[in-house]
Length: 325
Length: 254
Image 1 (spheres, chains in turn blue, orange):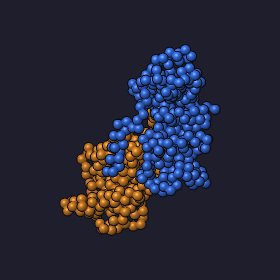
Image 2 (cartoon, chains in turn brown, purple; image 1 turned 90 degrees about the vertical axis):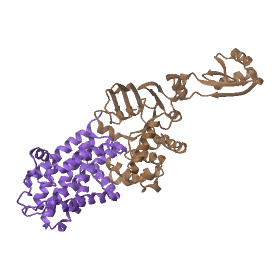
Image 3 (cartoon, chains in turn red, orange; image 1 turned 90 degrees about the horizontal axis):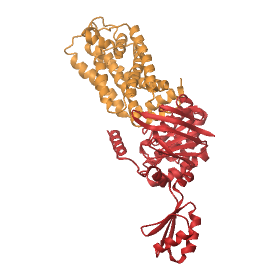
Image 4 (cartoon, helix red, strand yellow; image 1 turned 60 degrees about the horizontal axis):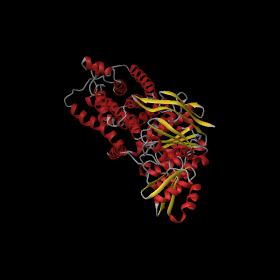
């Protein structure tokens, strides 16, 4: 079943077309990833889907409800973890969850249990009554995910959930996120510019400058690249290259002392090559195409693998300055 | 009406208010400074009216000041919530904007009434005698005024995005509101231009209502300017308008 349907969605801010005629569906119970660089239109799309922004034109519906016209119904069906923390730092973890439970009208008899479950699920039971102000970035993000699940939403939106976290917290949080659809019967809609994260999604939309430039499973998308790349080092590359061309039909070239060629079925190709040039081989390695290669091929540029832009750092510095004064 | 949502918005504000002791302290210190230092000094040059001294005359005005500052402070916290992201948590919840505004205005009302009651309790120190009915009516008016001013603050906050606008609001809206409210001088003695401004100010009617209740014995130039009924009616009407407009202002999507 399709839980999210987006058709010809457009959002302009003045002259800027932040979202430029995009269409896609999200399957219920799957992890759907929006992959693209900063400013590609990912957050704008999320804001339209979660009823915070009205689209300029086009249509978006979630769980059968129009995101623009039936805001209240859509809001009941979704949970959101925004890019910037939306916790109240002057309340404790438990109080933040309690606030959420009341806001979403969670039944009185259920409130305590769900909050307890949520806290244990994200491993924050010991810190439940500490002010959020004292939490690390990873703990805050986990608490936000827990909060987003309190009212049992159909779809959980995660906007760059691991942005700004250290590698270990990132890995922990990521493992936890990938388990959500199975454990909580929830569909995950996430944005990211980390390739490893996108790889774990069931389906990905690659977005750049407001347009979707590729849509499909990670395996599908990698086929755009044309398969695996095999690198071979031999004692005489020139001779080996001409020998390989005799047995395999592919473009064989040499770079940095290595022969390389691309093949749709690299694993079957290697034995054929070895049989031909056997003793002369010094090393063989094969590289599976990554989504980064896909992005590079489609846009001619790489997704910058940054944790925060300088502008974000300034924003954060100003905020923490204000908090202290 | 989503009572759960309104309730939890009020509880949150209240918890934060209690945890922030310095806020309570400055909220109490400000009226004391005005009452005993400004009032004490001014009463040396301002002759007493027909039944009350100047320091007694400004007492309802100082109550109004207390409510003005604490209600505005409380609703301006919406700007903080926007800045620090918490507002998004509220805005994506299945709760009508109207309930959010009512919740915030109720928080402002409760917090400012608590402070006003503390200041009101100082009446024996300035030579006033209040009956239980007078005291109780004054508290009711304080609550009503607190709600109105808080809903005005929410309307302001819905148009401002950043923290920097806070000083603009304080200097160009809150302070003129105080000076043009009849807190320090009777509205009837103001020049006609200022009189018009004072009559357009919701705080004027709150302070006038308090003066009606607390200083009924004054008959001269320091007496109240309007009847208690028109005061209360106007405050309620303004509150309704502000809540409605504030709710609409929050509703708008870009």
